[in-house]
Length: 283
Image 1 (cartoon, rainbow, N blue to C red):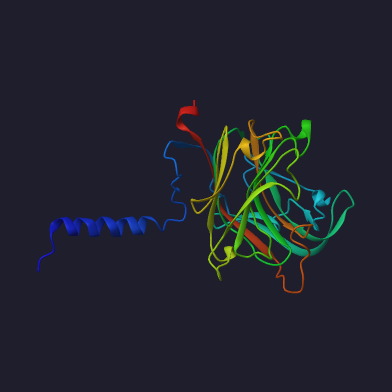
Image 2: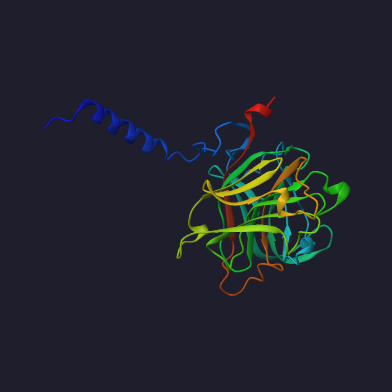
C-alpha cells in the first residue's frame, strides 16, 4: 500500500522536530508567548574561564550568612568556572582561610548580578543540574536591589529554586519579606515521581513575576502562585528591581551538616540563565 503524501510530510516534520528538540541550548517555550528575551548568559566561554565579569560578580566570604553555613565562598576556578558550555559551581571539602582570617572546612562558589543586571518583573529561568548529598544546598534566587539600603528581608527575596540534600526529589520556591522570612517564608514545593532524583538530569526552574503575582515552575509545570493576598496583613515587597544569584551552600540550619555519605566535590551545572520581559513593557 502506498503511503499518502500528507502522511509522509507529517512523518518528516515530526522527525525533524524530535531532532531539533535535542539541541542543548534550544530556547525553552515560556508559558506566555508575549515574553521577549532581554538578558541571558549561555556560559559559552573557554573551558576553565571565570563567568563573564560584565554580567556576574563573585561573593567572597565565609561568614555563614545567618544560616550557620559551613562553606567559604571563593573566586577560585576550583569552585567556579566555565566548562563545556556550562557554569560549574563546586563545593569542596578542604580547609581554607580567607583574607579576612576566617577558616572553614569547606569551599564553594556564589555569584550575583548586583549592579550589573537588575530587573523588575518578567520571566526568569535557568536550566540546571543540581548536586546531591546530605548537607548540600544549591540555589537559584533573587534579592531586591535595595538590600544595602533597607536590609533583609525588607528588600525582598525570591527563591526560584532551592534544594536540600535530604530531599533528593523535591525543589522549593519561596518568597521572603518582612514578617514572612527565614524559616517562615511564603513557600511551595514540587516533587518528582517516587524514586526520581533532581540531581540525575537537568531541569528548567523559572518564575513569572508580575505586579500582583509570582508563579513558580519546574520544567514549565506550574506548582505555586503567590500574590499580595498571600500576606494580607503584611507588606508585599516585590515591586522594584531584583538581581540574580547562583550558589551551592554547604551545611546550615535547614540542610544540616554533611555526613559520611556526602560525596565531595559536589557540583552544580548551569546550562543557561535567561530573563524575559513582556513585549508591551520592553521599550
